[in-house]
Image 1 (cartoon, rainbow, N blue to C red):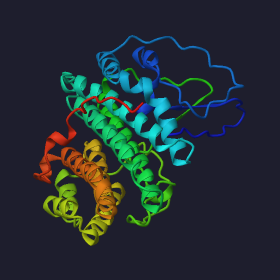
Image 2: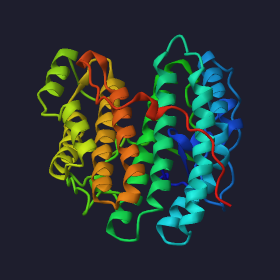
Image 3: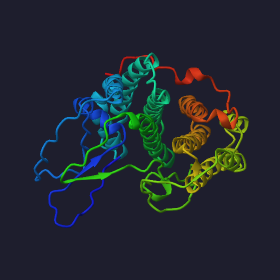
Image 4: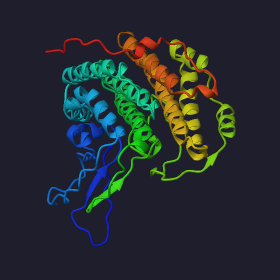
Length: 369
């Protein structure tokens, strides 16, 4: 989620600004007033702030987004410290008890957000937006639950891979949040250019092979193109029928096969499926979107990457000791349910059969002292 600077000729003290992602929640007042939140990283402390721009009149979309941001307020108030704890934990600068406590605190905050979002009415012009906001919160909950479960796993290669998986699930949840933002965008005040600010959109679909979060042994190294992805302002299109035919012919594991492999801990099947889900996501990224429905293709790619994570965590559950297995298996099943929810119904039903209650709001529990 870190922003990236671009050097521009005859410009000094440039700042980077993010226009997508959960980082926007960190500046509630700015979002509520129609501004765009500054990234926490990438700003030059020596540069002066650009001249303030006139505040535009808020649209109905602006007001709706501001209300949703309030729904996420509990999460955003603890997000910075939580993500810093996750980062330090990965570097062995934070012990497992501290990480477990931070993860439980985040789960409690996410549970509050899930409950509020469950009764949030939809925005008339973009009814899908609130659904994706809910799914984003569900994904953040699974990232925190995985972090907490991983604190019980002994130090070693499996634990290291699970820590990377925490970051991947968190990132995918950010991208689902971006989907909701994109649904609302046509009904919001257009983003205004600001002198001295470089606008850089986050790529819609992450490419693990090109970054530092790529899975590896003892989980499945899915390999793939190592080229860094950039946000595409425009994409080619094809008919929905042609796109659906592409999806159906791509060789995806069935929901029944996925569920069976996770439940039974069948390592060969799980390893194969992790590759298959990722490769089909990559295939859809490389092919045209259904005409006029870019978000549909993006959402399905994210769903498939969440299914890939379900099979990766399923492998971890099968490899873990019996005392660590149940918590990991619960996360694997939950990620599969989230993948089901993001599936487009026009492609036909997809249901792993795992209970939808796995994504229900987390019940607050006391954090360790």
